[in-house]
Length: 231
Image 1 (tube, rainbow, N blue to C red):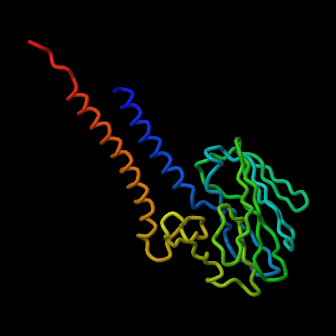
Image 2 (image 1 turned 45 degrees about the vertical axis):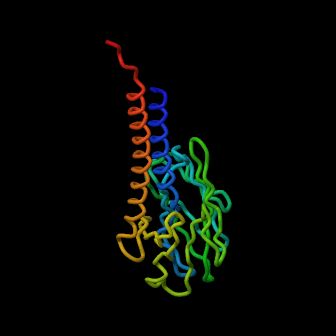
Image 3 (image 1 turned 180 degrees about the vertical axis):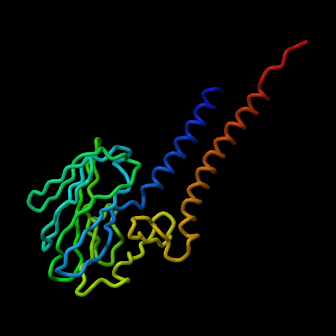
């Protein structure tokens, strides 16, 4: 009986943790800020990191500089050392806590021609790494680990150019967008953003509630089967 009770509680805790962890990183990105620049001009960009590698601290961020981009230089960051080798710019240091959001800044001159430029990134941690290198195909769903993308415009970027395009939340079908500060915000109503977290909380409650029902049933059954003392 004790084994059954222990198993039920462990199962509930494990399931709840799994929901929380997978729900928390499903929509993670490395978002550039800002997301657009005029062709041939120079600017500074922050590449926002949302988490480590499956709970492991980040120790390196290696960026591939796109063709046409010139004068790429890392902005000094306390606790980190940056080097440029060919078309690769790498920050090494930290470690950055896996639950802490941070940003790595790079200045560069944009290509002379308009169009999207992609910055594939290898995020290396004390244990494991994440390759943010997938280039979204036109008309296709966003890949799991997309490379940061910056739009190069012919003239000064408009407010529309600087507004992230909406993306479909794969878990609930909610349309969300990542703001220039890297935080996901709803495109239809503020309540939509809360809905996903509420659903996660509901799932956790259901899992724990199911475990309580199992445990309660076990206790009741044990009481019914308990032998009575004879007088």
